[in-house]
Length: 411
Image (cartoon, rainbow, N blue to C red):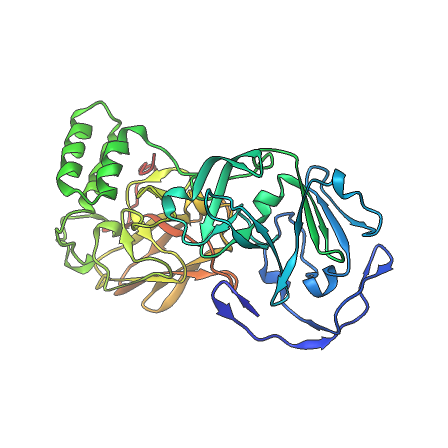
C-alpha cells in the first residue's frame, strides 16, 4: 500500500462476505488487512474497515453532507436532471477521475475524486500564494474559502461536502448539486489559523523577508512604544533569530547565570522530521506564514520539533531543573496525527507524555542534578506523520533548582 510517501506491505486474504444493513455487498475476490487503530476518525468512532473502489464501483452512492447520510440508490431509477451537473467518470489504475475546468482559473484537467483528501483539492504546480482562494466562480456557481494543495489534480472532501454528491459508478457518472458556497459549519481552514499579535506584524514581515536591518528598526519601535512587556520579550527573541551571534552551550554558561532558555542555548545535536531545526521561531515554510511559536498562544522561547525530532544539550552536571511545556502548532492542532514528547537524561527516559493531539499541552519539571546530557525527543504516535508540527514551549534550565511558580512567558 502506498500513502504519505511510504510503501508498506500487508497480508491479503480471500474476501469474506460483507454486509451493510443486512444486504450483502459485492466485493472483489481479495482484501488486504490494515491496523486501523493507527488511523484517526473525525467522527470519534473506531474505524472498522474501508470500502474500496472494487466494491463501490458496483453501486450508485449518494453523499448527503447536510443530512449526514450516505444512500445506496438504484442506478436505473435515478433522475439525473434533479441531481445537478453531470461529470462522466473515467478510470485510471482503478481510481475514478472526472474532467472539469479547474478549481483555479485556467487549471483544468482530469481530476481524481478523492473523499480521503481533507481539503478542497489540489492543482498541479499551484504556487503557495494561491493556496487560499477567498472566492471562485466554478461551473457558474460561487464558492468561498477554498483551501488547495499542489502536486496533482484532486477534488477533495472539503469541496465535495458543499454539494449533494451522487456517484453513479455503474453508469459512469458523478453528479454535483451545490448546497452551500462555503465550507460546512464548524469547518476549520488548516493552513491559516494562527494567533495574531498586531503589535508584532511589522517585525514579522521583516523577519519573513530576512531583512535584519528592518527587523532591528521594528524592534526599536516596539521597545520604545506602548506594547506589553511580554510582547517586547517576544519581539527581542524573534529579531535575534536573524542575527549571527553565537549561542553558548549550557555547560559553558557562567555560574552567575541561574536561568537559561534552551531556545537561547546551542545544542550538540538538532534534528527534525520536516523543514530544519529552529529556535525561538518557526523555520521558513510554505505552510505557515508566521514565524511565531504559536500553540494556542504565542511563546517567547522554544524549539521547533516536527516529529521525529531530537535535540541534545550538554549540561555537565551544572544545572538543577528543567521546566516548560510542549504542544502542537495552532494551525495543525485539528489535523496532526499525533506525537509523543520524551525527555531523557544521560540516556535514561525520565518523561513521556501521552499521545498529544489537538490543544493538549503537557507540562514537565525534570530534576537535572548531576545530569551531563539532556535529550528532548518527539516521536510520531502513528505510522502517519502528517501535520505533526510539535513545539517545545519555553523549555528553561534553572541553576538553583527553583523554578519560578508564575513566570509568564507567553501571550
